[in-house]
Image 1: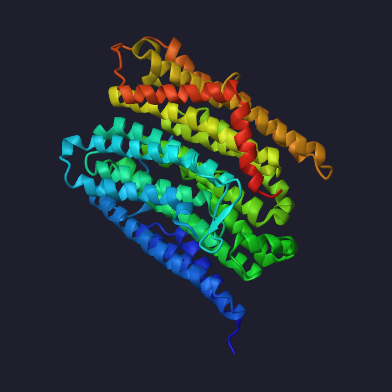
Image 2: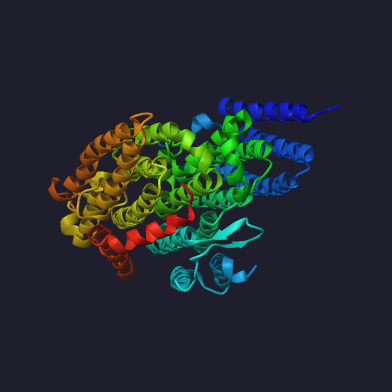
Length: 100
Length: 484
């Protein structure tokens, strides 16, 4: 029987992979994917809590999160494409225009 | 549920959509006029908000949305901010090459997000309104997409802000797991017993981290300097006032209507956060040469001052936060309006470009000087009375707390912060009046609408500083909706 803990473990692993990805990776597209991973970790946790406590609120919240994530990716990708056109780069170490 | 409860937000969104439609029939050279149309529309909405009665709370969407005095206070605050920021963007419009109307209407959509944030009474609305603000700001920050600093600022804001919303969402999931509810009303009944539940603690920590990003408090401030510097000036102004105030609105709702029994355990954490933010912001502002970057560090410091009011966990603390925000609005927007005019003329955003401003544009020099004096907190301007109220609230709480002396240390840190800030704020004033004369001493023309904007800001700073009674009553009335 798969219980709540198992779902939460997977969710925590996804969350950690996401955070490590954002912090460690240098490619902006991979960072964007890692950000999506974090949101989906939250979705999984939300659905699991909702299922095991018979409280539908969590699943309603997941729909909002999915919608917002889609909007975020749409704007984010457009931004990265604009940056790539202008600078021919998708790496964070090239974003050093503003320093003290 | 009556539609009139969310009437203000609906009107703002309709205004934004109307602008986009009207744009189709307006030739490019008249597009600036659409900005005035938006200002006019917002003015009407702001005036009509005074006909709304919120002396008792109205709820909509099954308790998700609340309209009370606090919500109404913040809605008026955001409307006023947006009006002034739109006037600044009209001044700035020459430097936005394409999509001027989209720029105006995105500001209106962001404003709608802020107004919803002021009313959120459920984690779903908290999250969605916070994201509505953030996603519109991704576009607003990177709007000059042919200029590399703007794009770079946009990408940095995107990554860090999406990370913070990830933390916020994960935190909400954990809080939901622990409390079995997302509604603030239901949560407030349970929060007292959840204080030892690790799931709830971690969840709340993530949520506060996510909101800490919005207000740019240490250690979630890393995005602020670069984004403030790279973004178009009106966007920076909107970020510094609107987005920050929305963060505080959400934080106040979360702490004092969702988890009032729980947050008292976190007083030390909030104290340390406030003290470190004040000192960090002020110290880092010292060596800055770029005006926008300097104002960004100063805005971090002001987030610290405002957190003092939250950390006081009292009614007087929260009303001081509202009062301080009002004074901060006029001072910061006046400063950004001056920066816009000067950088349009000179083409630079350095402090040095203000040299000789007292002869080139006396009104600009006066506005900048008073804004800096108010931000420092010198009487008789708004900033002084705001800081006075915040310190008073903190000291009152210190006298009532026997467990630790943290409140006195916080008050000390705030005073040290003010002393440090005198150096860089007065550095700007010195550059205006006493620097070596620049070669170009031609007068800087100021358009009539911007002149009016500056006068409104000056009036606001002086009024709040000299006649604090009525606004303070309003702020006290507004925080009555919260529990302490």
